[in-house]
Image 1 (cartoon, rainbow over the protein chains, first blue to last red):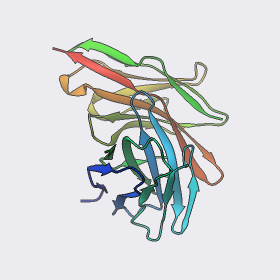
Image 2: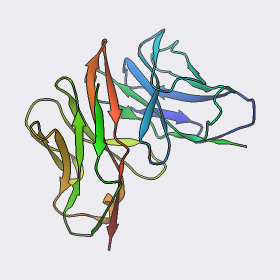
Image 3: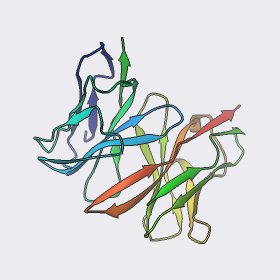
Image 4: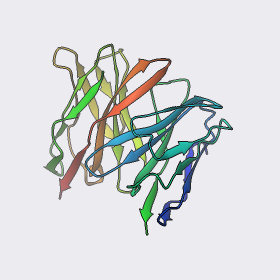
Amino acid sequence: DGGITQSPKYLFRKEGQNVTLSCEQNLNHDAMYWYRQDPGQGLRLIYYSQIVNDFQKGDIAEGYSVSREKKESFPLTVTSAQKNPTAFYLCASSGTSKETQYFGPGTRLLVL
Amino acid sequence: AQSVTQLDSHVSVSEGTPVLLRCNYSSSYSPSLFWYVQHPNKGLQLLLKYTSAATLVKGINGFEAEFKKSETSFHLTKPSAHMSDAAEYFCVVSEYYGGSYIPTFGRGTSLIVHP
């Protein structure tokens, strides 16, 4: 089955800790995206990558970092600088139909 | 700059009655427009998209939307609601900018379906 996988489904972060959220796709898509979802605010773009080894900041990149070493993978690190990390995080990708995005199932990050 | 306004945060209907979820957009260029559905604690699923072809777009599960440029609207409709339609719905506008398609999401409309 082709698709996007995100792991873990739930993640707990302690104060001052960095955590990494995984996003993998086997759709052969060039572009990948990370979003943060908070209740009543829709989705906000954190980072996106159009090609391997290149990525750009979205609207709310502060306190987050990413890498794109492989086409299939786009991990997101939530650093200790992100003071309000509790949210639902969604990864997406797009391929030849560049304007259309396909989403993973999401990771819910909670702070202990 | 592009923006999306979903005019209702919640819509409540009875099963078997029509559904109308309203979306207005603002865009500098010819946008692509989308509706996505999200069930609780799940990712988003594409319902339908408009990309400058027919103005009436048919999607999955009996949903459709009409692009009205003069009204800058892209409302989502369904003739008869089903209990399984209860979910969060997002209207999205996407413009091509700097070599990339950058989407902007509305805040979402929660559809409640009563038996």
